[in-house]
Length: 511
Image (cartoon, rainbow, N blue to C red):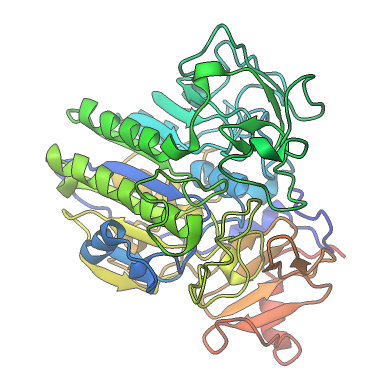
């Protein structure tokens, strides 16, 4: 573990033994195990969906899932950024226990190692067919910069339990801008071999910072770093040469991953399957299909939310068409909190108006404040889950163990070490949930017990001017009572030293 970076404490592995106890034994007797689909949005905030109070635009397909399922009001990702959040979701292992789970570069080696057990391994061992489609951001290949993008890249998702994968190699704002079809570049163009570098540009390849006239779709915000290789009229992070017909078009990213998800469902309707769908829409660069551009009145970020909702509708319709909807467990969530300007001048700030992507919370993506990890979570399974709203405290870290219990698959001794069985909370038969959760920003850890939120001291900057987000860092203890102060405006650490002491005990402090 190495979350310390600029922080004033360390956290050891022994502290995890006190994490909230699992549910009492007693599973669900099912004549048929459900299909399971994760729909994981990227940078979608707690306040971005109309079922969570959005009023500026409507998300009817997502709202329909919420009306017919269980909507959580106090659910949390493990981390406030993508790579560590997804790492923990897939492995049931806290990302902050390792020093290499920060935001992955586009040419990063695979963060989850083949010897690690994943939730896909668990489902596969239980007899499920498994698939991963869309946003990955967990690295590919053995070591950073070692990939041959013109051949099979290995190790990859196949080594992590996924029978099938069709993934963005990195993120939409990082090269390479190609799809990986079962670990090979889809539509590979032998006449335009792919070369990637994150240190030096390729001679003769134009860069966004030098050729703004070539940025025909989006221009970068100043000083964010999205001004290097130009692909599809948009400049990215990193340097790229080649690609040819394999290069994606941003306006068809959602179309592509949705079509692949629908095909996966149709082709495997006679099996029992687990499917991860990672959408990109709300993450930069935002350039939705023309069917959605200009429709939200909130700039491209709002349009991207409409596009995300369309994808949800298409997946649900595919399940309904194949008579799978009633016995499919859909878990819809986000990887972390929201950010409005994260690198491109897309009018999302100017047209935000009174919309609050972070909902009632303070902060956002990258932040230790609650908006960093408080995310939407909707669970839809008509055969077992009753329509309701729950205030139970739940963390992504517990999806692994909870779903293993659901399908009756024992967890190997060295697998999912931090995940606990909260299946009854996940399906709404228990309204209590965890005693507390641990949350990670890029610089520090915090503890939240449903009322009190304690943020450990950290000497990193308190504010990110580029993204206009308060990061929640301070060189002293912070304590907030979210029952009385949901916006975390009043630090009451000095008034409640006993609470600070109790929450500190859940961490091992090393000054």
